[in-house]
Image 1 (cartoon, helix red, strand yellow):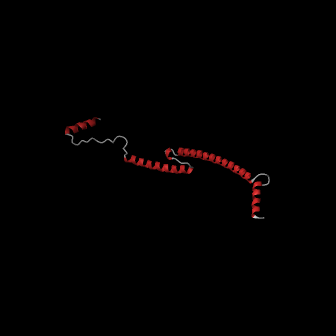
Image 2 (cartoon, rainbow, N blue to C red):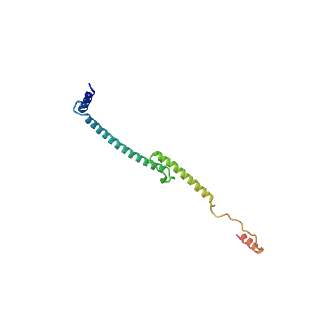
Image 3 (tube, one colour):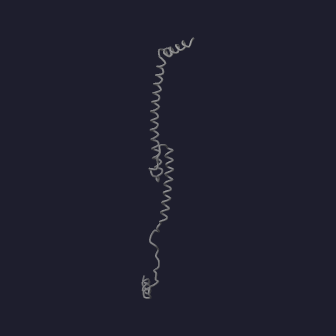
Length: 141
C-alpha cells in the first residue's frame, strides 16, 4: 500500500470511528464532557473541604484561646493549625516576658505594707522640766 493510500485509510477510519456511525470527534467530545463534569465535581468537593477546614481552624483557635486565658486574643492568628500553634508559642513567650518585666518593676518600687513601727520618743535636747513632765505623763498611762 502506498503512503497516499494509507493516509486515505486513516482519514476514513477517523471519520467512521468504530464502525457504529460515531466519529472519533464525537467520542472525544463525549469524553471531554465527562472530564469537565468530573472536574466540576472535584472543584465543588475541594471548595467544601476548604470550607470545612476553615471551620475546623476557627474552632481550634477558639479552643486554644479558651485553654490559654492569659494570652491576648489578638496574638493568636493563622490560617492553619500549624500557624495557630506557632502564634500561640510566640504569644506565650511575649506574655511571659511582659509578666516578668512587670514583676521586676513591682519589686523595685515595693512599698512596705502598713504604718511604720513605733519608735521611742527622742528626748535629746529637752530641758529638765520637759523631761520630768514627759516622765510623769508616760507614768500615768
